[in-house]
Length: 363
Image 1 (cartoon, rainbow, N blue to C red):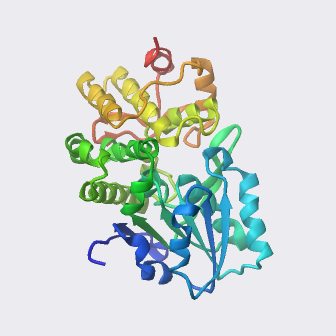
Image 2: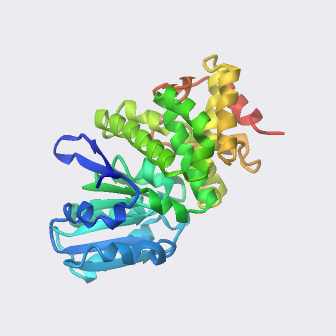
Image 3: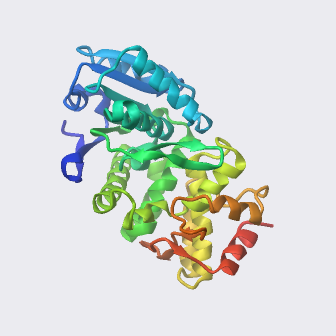
């Protein structure tokens, strides 16, 4: 246990531990101590199952295990896929004391958590995230859900896990594109509330890209700490939690407009955050030097920074209008007053927004 660090997300009777470090999947007590009954459903996908399913099952020899292996990809984060999980739970007569383990990236965590929130009006679930993006973002905080053809994450629930087990060693099997996608969310934490961390990332990005265990553990722990503090203050996004969506209104529009799966979520968020930085500079908050620092760091992380040419301004605006932060039809955005200081959702001058959509990253 010496290498495993523990954070606690404080939410009263819904508080839970977040375990971070190498070898977490070899320490069965981290998992079994959070399981109440004897029935365990492991929800994973066809990419992760060959890598880690047997390892997780070997920790659960005293339990009745059902596995649900889904197809891998954002395009399968749908109500139809959700029904596959329900079918398995019902066919095996899972009861209210059952536990669902979400073993995979953000899609598995979101859809598995939503299934747990809905089945018999709520059963326990545990997150075992296997991508960097899931480890630093989607596995922490209790947002669960599925996509709709008209909008990303528009159907879901706030539902907290019983524990999050983050094994940094699994990141060694992650491909470079997925790893970079996760760095987009890591960078986000520095931008919204932790300028010191942003500078650390500028100085240590090469170590992260080389998957240095010490650098990875620090970056994941710092990211999770930032998220846990925000979620503890505002669990259901009625206020400060909205800053976690920096770049996401632009990014979700990119994902929806391009077709789910064309851009990884982190890639779309990277582009969206650069667009948010551009708009922040246009309204007079972010200076040109800091705007360029942001773009440069995303580029160094091997992430795209310009929007797809196929999505024109009018379509962007239509897609951005389908966003949970919007009120009465107005597009509300998280912007940057400076590196380390994000605004709450705000409606911006339409002319300036159009200028960003028309000009940023376009030839």
